[in-house]
Image (cartoon, rainbow, N blue to C red):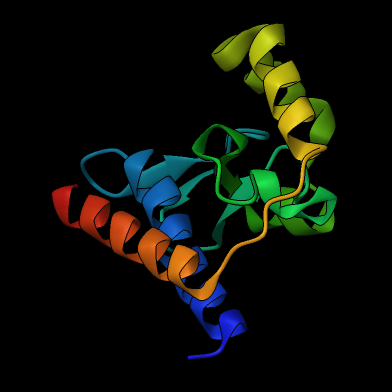
Length: 128
């Protein structure tokens, strides 16, 4: 399996876990930045607070990724203006700073790392 294929597979399971773990008993989840509520698989993304473009170190960090509607995540570039207050309430300034520091480091994933992430989040999905 190619590294890129394994990464996509891991992301698919991780993203589904993020959205479903925040959903209510009926499968509805709210965007953390605008409050829009939809089914977890209806135009909802797993959006990064610190953009994934800043490095792999925060790509699969649960505290950095939360449910967002596609509009906020894609068309509004993550809607940072509204994401920050959510993060501040959830993790405090020290939690945000930890993520910022982590994002400045490098994480080099191997094929096995991605496959392990896939298995981990597939298992967590089974437990939901």
